[in-house]
Image 1 (cartoon, rainbow, N blue to C red):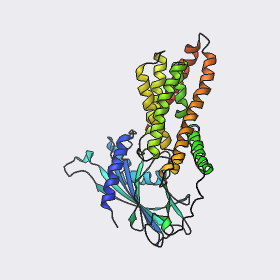
Image 2: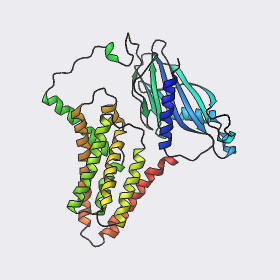
Image 3: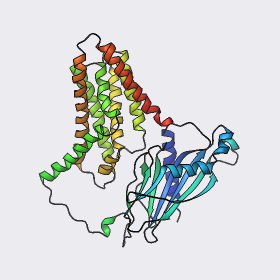
Image 4: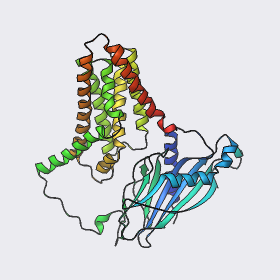
Length: 383
């Protein structure tokens, strides 16, 4: 059963993500965007991943001959799209066909080809959940919609490199919406709400926010260091951190309530902003007004980096109703983690700031190192 309206929406979203991503060097034909529909048949115990891949040619015809469109699509499917049932990888059968998506008047060398790849197989006996995992080396995000027992899911999924899709239960359901398990399985009501249970929910969010900063991208704990490299003066540091944390809290809260979507290359943007903060620390010695604008944007982007993590999605994106206490706890945990990183950095830097050689021997080399790491994060996925 075909779903043309879903396919058109997925194609548009995939093309938008492709424009946001930085382009990598062309080596023969190359997959530029991917959208797919996952068909789950719980009665027949089968699955089909119907992927539409737009393939663009290289400027070198010799490279195009070496890697034709169907081979580029096959390599993408085999290397990056990993089908899992109950977290165990399953091998799929591949079938590939090519459709030309350009107009007839488009020159041959400029034509774009859409390769339709079907990955199919049997659902393992006793399996409960279907997942699609995108390999961390994948150069782009993938847009997916799940159609279970001929009924499409209500939300489109954007799967980033190194992340899992939302799990889909593949057990046969008796009636009703196949995406609402509560219609066939009784829901055990939670215990009566008490202050203790609410505190516990907030604590879980707090620990998740704390670990999101220190257990995720190294860019996040380096941001307070970039703030302190310009100056260690108390008022200036407090003002900068306040602007940074306000941006972070607004971004995280918006993402938790579903007001901000995924698919933005936030780590790359944060790497560039961190490099900019360190460059200013090398050039200037005082806080200028534009630094607060940069820090506000940095806080917002840092929140998006956290919101793109798998832990954040499991806490907020993949649940029906968002708990206010958990949102507040997560934001507080992330903010306190950044403050802790700043305090540790301030203690170390204040010790050395007493010496005349502090700026030349500490600030400038450290700023260059952090700036280099930020630039590395920007260009890392190019190669």
